[in-house]
Image (cartoon, rainbow, N blue to C red; front, side, top):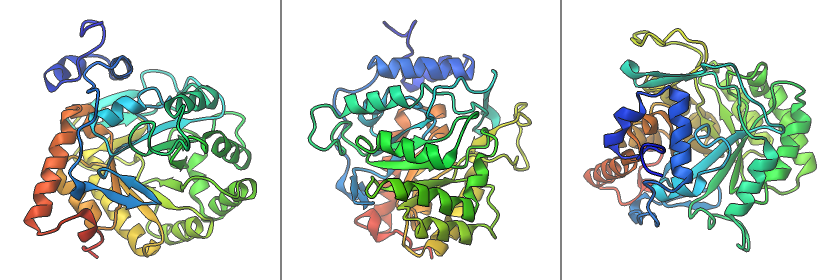
Length: 362
């Protein structure tokens, strides 16, 4: 099993991988990671200056893999060994579903962006939960040790036959023994009606349904859309706090198309991620940080591709960050680069830890 079947994930192989159809390339990379190709046996130790504590968890560095890459929790341990500070698997739904018709994934090379309309294609919660259980087999608590870093489970609803107030509490029940935190995906643009659940009234009802069934569960986060209006943010944040959420992920993909996109795929339907999302995601983060007033943990996501981007998000109130598109374009080498750049910036500013700079832009 060598690179003619499964790709080597080094930077030199990335141009060859990108010649493939985007979804085929993604599938081959997942298979390569599952086979352990280009994955170190043991993750490198992170500089203690990069360690972060939030939601009662310790993260060896603030850089996580966003949901959508490992939809079926097949390569959590491999991603951790590559150097991620945490890994979020999913989105997983109650029942398996094929997702939307192909083609449904597009690389916008000229814009360093991706458009997807995958539609929550996944193997379903039964197989997902089994894989998380195997990850933590033999451990007393299933917390952090299975992968070596915190692991999040991102949950969503099926396109057909969904009942959010029934389905989300049931999904929480299935992943709570194995996940370090749980994310309610209410913001994918590719499942009809899903984003309506971000409405403050619906969100309160959903969180109440979870609370009614579960007196205890791992930290619960809400993933927000970048297309929320500034007027909607205060009520949504307040609903999350009142409902017992521990944090927010800011943000998911956008259905808008910022001016200046150059790729011929720019008009494809779906959620846009990557560099063009940076400005709006940063703006939403600043607004959310003000509204939450330190009552919620914040994970920044969207257009993060440098140590300076990470520093800016943390200064604007983020506790952690997630990447996806920049990992697709650069491969595993991006992790070492981001950490090196972030450490250099910390030292230039005379800061000893990330806690020293968190929220200092406000």
